[in-house]
Image 1 (cartoon, rainbow, N blue to C red):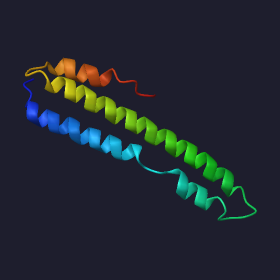
Image 2 (image 1 turned 120 degrees about the horizontal axis):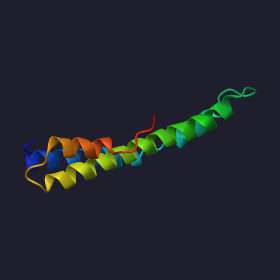
Image 3 (image 1 turned 90 degrees about the vertical axis):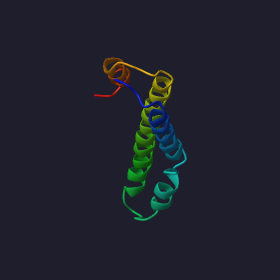
Length: 97
């Protein structure tokens, strides 16, 4: 496929920006603040599990977006790339089942 190099670079930069935004999200404070909301219940344990799972999900999303950005940035350095090569790089990312 022929690649519009400038658009691919803009795409890579946009994805990198979203990735960095995700890295800056504070998920712990809302969960920590909520732990005391329902005294006498197991809600505090739910909050602890919630912050761990939410943090893991955002970390995975950050890594995926960073990888997509790096692939797009590397591809932007070439004027032509085969569609198979580009999709192969995306497919090679370790996607959990």
